[in-house]
Image (cartoon, rainbow, N blue to C red; front, side, top):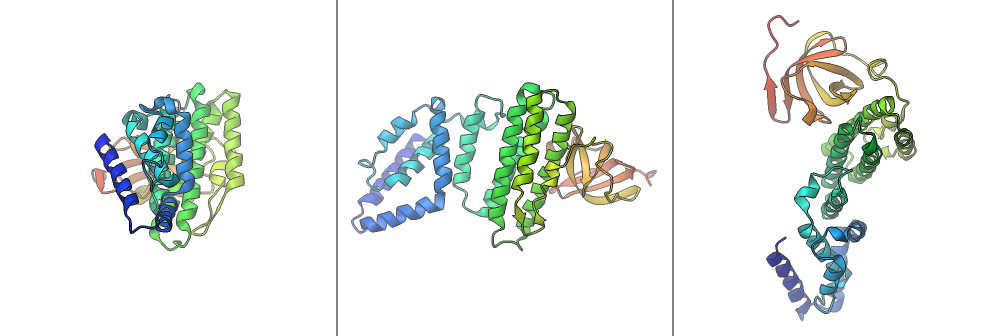
Amino acid sequence: MTSWEFNHLEETLKTLSDKGDLSFSRKQAIRDRVFRAIGQIELADAIVEGEAKAASLDVSLSHLRRALLPHRLSFSMPITIAVMVLVFVASVMTGAVAQSSTPTSSLFPVKKVLEQIELAFIRNPLSRATATLNIADERLKHLEASLGEEAALSTVLRESQVALVSARDALEKAQEGNEADPGVAALLERFNALLSDQKTILQDIEGSSENEEVKNAVVAIREALKDGAADIKTTGTLPSGNASSSATPSNQTANQGSVSLPEGVQTFTARIGTVAGKPAIFVGDRYYQVALSPIDLTPYIGRSGVMITGEISGTVVKIYRIAIDSTAWGEKPPAGAN
């Protein structure tokens, strides 16, 4: 928000407060409606986070609050001050840099504040759940990228788990009264895919890390998901088993008991996940290691509903053609393919 836009918003609120045809009770009612619409808890959380990182601001929050005291904005009440503070914070923070930061970056707390501000203004439950899933997806990518970096793993593990729990809570709210909405089912499928990816990454971490703090964090995450698994009406439960079952070598037992695709060339829908830190194709609970692909699958980890034409051989797949969203890559299977 530019200085002009900020001043214009302030003047608009002042003009509204000066209207003689609005009684105090009417102003209070408007204030309360805005308060509920934006979300009291999210605003409070964002402000608290902002106070803790006031050094990152060009203008301190305390100074900004003094500038926005009710004698300047007689309509303000607490909510107007809160909204103005949040909007201004979003404009003066180093947003572009912070948005690309990782959990171990010094700017990551700023990124979290910006995320809280964004979520505070999303009122549609489906949109909010989508936004939290996007955050959780990004955190899992950070976690996977941190494999082998012992100093960073504990922090990244914690942030990944917090994001997944937030996504689960948002999904529960989105589902209330919308059980038949196909959008909810799609979000649930995506959430389950993220849990499955987390399980695989946790196995990789536990098998490779010698850091006791990291191993303890893995155990704590499994227990937290086991204890906090919430009922989901679409499929019965959010499957805590995806993130709480004991670790097993991913190249030995993870596929046991799963229904496999027939050998030879097949066209099927799948999800892109990871096994041993490398992209893999998942069909249900069964995964296939990728021997050939027309594109690098790494940027698409976590995507579901991916259409694939490929050659299945045991637990290996050669991908000849792949379609993600509305974009396709690759060609028809070669003449010699089965």
